[in-house]
Amino acid sequence: MEMKALKIGKYTIEKPIVQGGMGVGISWDRLAGSVSREGGLGVISGVGTGVYHNREFSHRVVATRPYEAENFYSRDALFEIFRNARAICGDKPLACNILYASSEYDRIVKDACEAGANIIITGAGLPLTMPEAAKDYPDVALVPIVSTAKALKILCKRWQKTHNRLPDAVIVEGPLSGGHQGFKYDECFLPENQLEAILPPVVEEAKNWGNMPVIAAGGIWDHNDIMKMLELGADGVQMGTRFIGTFECDAHDNFKKVILAAGEDDIKLLKSPVGYPARGVITNLQKLIEKGEAPKVACISNCVTPCNRGEEAKAVGYCIADRLTDAYDGNEELGLFFTGSNGYRLKELISVEELMNKLMNGEE
Image 1 (cartoon, rainbow, N blue to C red):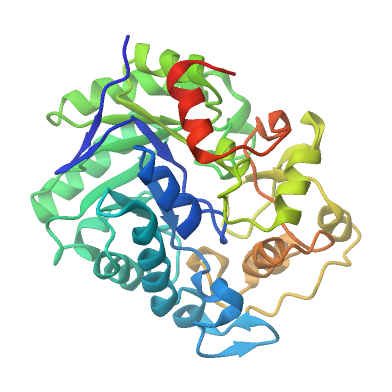
Image 2 (cartoon, rainbow, N blue to C red):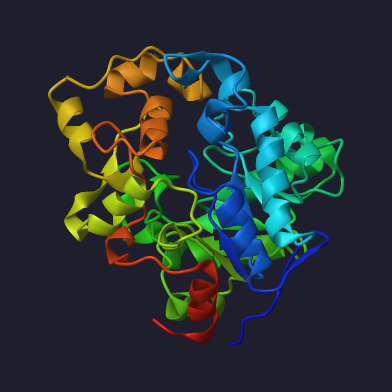
């Protein structure tokens, strides 16, 4: 097997490595711009842009929190992030990851398209209405994230019926990824739901819908893992956690410190107001939640629709927007630090250029 360029819609990604979109503020202009510059696909997270550059682009802030979805998902900040990323990577393809669970999803997709995204990636729910959100931007490639071949089939049927359109590529994500999972808690541990098991059926299903590239994600660490996924039929891979360990990663130094210090047993599946488990590092926050002493849920930002204006947040004991923002700010006491299952293997920071060379050439 050899690594070939990845074609997504009208865009060619020189190296078949997609950097995972990590919010809040883990993959913004510096990381995404650097990955695209080095020939991969840099992905800007569309989550929580209102906290970018010390809330400069959030037009209303309450107690340091962007007020309502219009400010938490700041259009002005997203435009600035894309401008800064373009200054790094030029006209190479850039993507934006937008959670389907986001409040004002359609508006955020339009903002990203207008800001200069070439590709939109969406997970955190099956994005059945994704083509509607992007209907005015035919040149923008659409890439949904699925966890099963059945989900891809349902999605393709719907897209074809409603918009006579199919995905330009599909990402199949296994349950070892960082952040939110596509399976319920117990399902994440079943052998039949691991990436090696769910990838081949998705590859076969994709063939039923034409020449759709399949991108494997979740727990991929090095060159050998990439080659294994290609041998199983993938056309490329998405990797998030590995890019946290780069100088260019937009995360706060304290965020990187927490991940670098984490042991294997410190990384667990956590309850989330989104309704599905999320993988991250056990820190002081989880201890406070267990004791019922975490900060009060106020739902200032109205970040995701499944939370039902803070009702689900109260049920699990914390507001995800506030705690991810605290992690972005470097607050080790109250922050929520997402990482994939391999996060404990990060022991030092390297440049994006060096990491891409290692992934392509097989150096550990």
